[in-house]
Length: 299
Image (cartoon, rainbow, N blue to C red; front, side, top):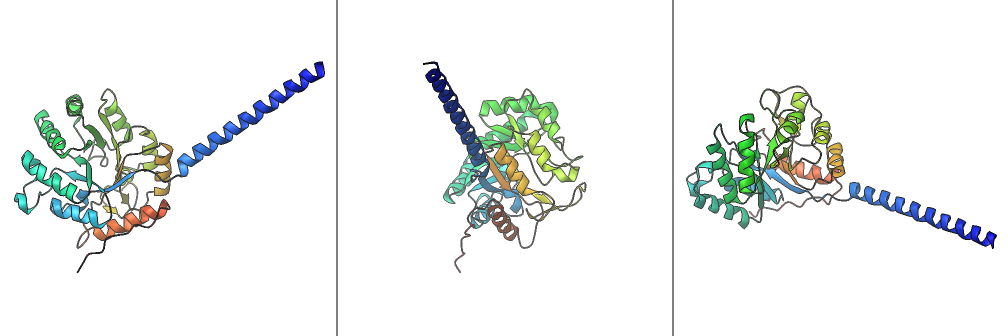
C-alpha cells in the first residue's frame, strides 16, 4: 500500500513539472510572437514634409505615397479655394472644408502640429481648431510657464498633447528627461519623439525611446547624417545614423500601437514625394512587410 501511495505521489509531481514547463514554453512563445508579429502601427506622413505646398496638394502627395494617415500643421496654406489663408486663421466653416477634403481622399488626420503662443488664448485658439478637425492629439512644444494651463485645456477638449523635441538650444524638450519632467502632474501630456532631432544633441534615439516607454503617443520618423551637428538637415529615413531596426524592435517591445509619421525638413526639388516613397519602401523592407503599391497617375 505504501508503495502505491509513493508511486501516485511521484506521478503527481511529474505531471505538475510537465504542466509547468508547458506553461513556461507557451509564455515564451507568446512573448516572442509579440515581438515578431507585424506591428499594428498607423503609418503616415507629417504634412510639413510638403510645407511649400497648399493643404490639398499636401494631401494629394500623401495619397500618392500609399499612406493613410497625415499630420497637419496650423501655419500652412489652406489652398486657393480658401484664398490661401493660413490654416490657423480659418473660420470653423473653413476648417470643415479642409476636413472634408481629407475624408474625400480616404485619409485620416488624427493629429495636428500646433504652435500655440505665449498666452493661454493662443492655445485655446489651437485647441478649438484641433477640435474642429476632429484630431485625437496635438503635437506641440508648450512653454514651461503654461504647462498647467495647456494640460487643463487638453482635458477640457479631450485632446492629448504630444510633446515634440527639437535639438539642444532650440527646444526645452531636446532631452527625454525634459519631456519626463513636463509629464509629471500633467495627465494629458504624452510624447512625440522626433528621432532625427535627437542625434543633433548627441542623444541616441533608442535610449530616448527607452526613457519614454509607455509615454509615447506618436513618432516623427526622421533620419540625420551624423551626431552632434545641429546645423545639418535631415536625410531620407534609412540613409543616416539612426538604427531603425533597433527603433522598431524597441517599439515592438513597448507594445507601441500609435501613429508613426514620416517627416522631411529638407526641401528637395521638385518636392519630397520621391524620397517619401523611398522611405515607405524602406519601412516595408526592414519590417519584412509586402512591398507597397503606389498608385499610377493617369496621363
